Image (cartoon, rainbow, N blue to C red):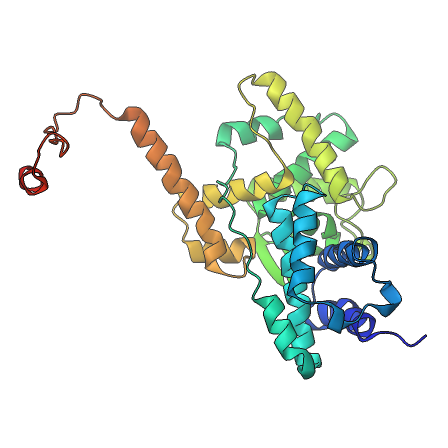
Length: 337
């Protein structure tokens, strides 16, 4: 059977456009693939369209909106999940409109479906005391404890995403002054991140202990599991959760959720509080645009506002503001104000 135009363009989108042209990471491509898997199953199971007959001409605004309603209603997805799936469809139809101009009108109608507004979350980050408590948990008498201590120190010091951390190899580390580590971010964009001296010392011992300081080992994973393979993202999460539980036992009031990304936010906030400009923080963390980095500035302002509210004097000698409800004439109230 001849492939449909949808299957042809979807294959080109996932295998060539995203990977080769946009150079997106394998994890991002998998996320796009999973979104389309859900969409195709919806078309087959809820709309009765056989996948071998599903064409671009079958996909229109009502179908996409029904799919989004299905995500929220039947699958109980969040607004964030709905917006992510819609963003994937938007990306595909932006690709299609340049590949198949005869579908330009259909593509632009789908592209006009808006993302749903969602509450802006405040940045979750650790205080210096909470961070120190977590970093003190690994047992340095054990081989895996020493690995955990180095890994968590590098995670904070570099502000790396968890995938960036697990992708690091021994050859990405440079310990000659100025010490730095090479990080490959989204779209395989490389950035060099400086290391503080304590972290550089830990890394030097780690490379020597695991035999990773030899040239023939430069392609080996920087952080390995017990089998000598590369740690997974879930492995990093498991290790972090273990040490966070230890920190909670030591500090009963420590209830804040902590993920590997919390370390990244913590680094960003600490840099901002140290007076580092947003532009430098953007480059340090590998943000595409400084507007992303502004979340730390907003969170810092919120923190300052909360602090001011706590120390505000309820008996401050401010003149009482007359109530307009007590003054029959609004103009008189404005004059009094």
